[in-house]
Amino acid sequence: MLIAVISDTHMGTPPSWLDNVYAGWLAPADFLVHCGDITSPSAWSYFMQHPNFLCVRGNCDWDPALADLKPALTAQVGPLTVGVTHGWGPRSQVPVKVAEAFGPDYDLVCYGHTHARDWSVVSGVRLVNPGSLGESGSLALVTVADDGNMSCEFVDVF
Image: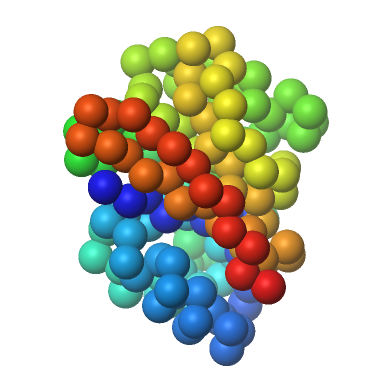
């Protein structure tokens, strides 16, 4: 199973380069997870074309059309219990705060906010932060093997 994780797109109208990114890395994934700061209804609509799209609200998602997005969610993603949030507070403390908020009952917790890539275990919680797709062209591909083992590849799209 393949999970594409993006965050911090910070885009109004989706730029033309996004079509190649979607076709090459996002569409082939079994699930597409956006960790917030999508910032516009047009970007949200663009990503909704994925049949298994999960998205949370970030601190820059002020548009009233995004008001129904929750700040955190829990989803069953194949055999995994996955938590998704944007993150909050000082950037250096975000991984610890996120791990504490979700706890070790989660197989994977996806977060954003820091714009910094992270594939780590904090307090027994496997975390992934894809970095910022909109600002640095970064995304994460999490591969889940049949035995539940996970690996992560970070992709630079530009």
